[in-house]
Length: 392
Image 1 (cartoon, rainbow, N blue to C red):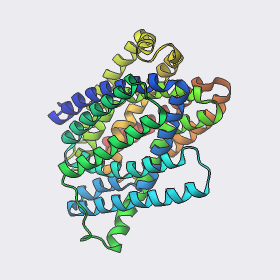
Image 2: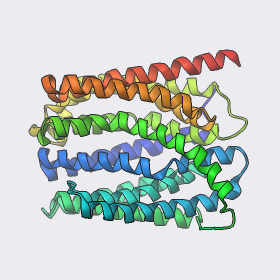
Image 3: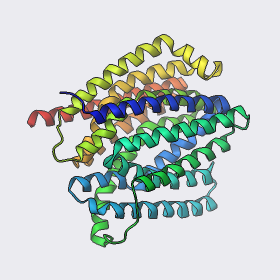
Image 4: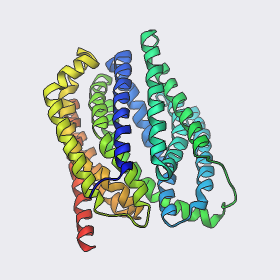
């Protein structure tokens, strides 16, 4: 069995994205320094958790409706996405007026933007993923250029970086609206339809929230239990791990669209896992040999402590590949409850391990906790999928 053209195009686009993401991290890490980079990572992780919570699984729910042949609800999902984004902004502004929250206004604005972006992006992934990948590559290049200007003009600061990030995300929303011809419609709006949408979306939101917590809780915990410096060092390892996972992410995006179709071949997941792990092993070997030189060259001596963090996380990413590939299939097939149970167990392992390891081992402890969590998560998903395939 061979992978179809869409998968290879996705890989090529992801390779370009990896290169641009690397440049983005270079300018941000060197421009902000370790401590401010820690604050930046903390803000972004909080935003990531909040926008997953506030989007209520709309983007993923659209995949389920599309698989049922209900594409007519597309415009309704666009309307609901806009309404939720506005509601998040209004409620967020009210909350930060009454409570003292670090970076509260920034988090509210970025969360409301991210809610709309995430829903529109998921529609794009499902309908025409190749075009969505091209848009992502183009915007990443634009973001690199803007960050380079900030860096070389010596005006790179936490506020300027966050402002540029927000502008790029707004541009992404506008481009998606234009190229995918997204429009609002009240035609399908009814209590029965909303009940069906959120009946699917809510458990999917719980699923995605657990996914995000599994990735983000370590950064939030280390910032609150240790220091901004440790958060900055750890966040570099997380950034490298994220780039490391972009190959299975490329497959995941295509699989999400394919698994939403009735004629999906379940065995294609095994082939994508084999390709992903093969590339991952090469990446780990390369990191062990050249990682310290890469950090010194890209970010400077002040980030060298992130080498061991990254090496540990890379081994955990092997197990996380199973989850990355199989999770969209679980969602598209309506197995959100099973996936939620597995992820919930994984998050509990993650929180408990971080709680006990961070005080004694700092960022190394956080990395070990993540590997434990990733292993539990990936192992459960693979075991369940293998049992399903055997029954077919």
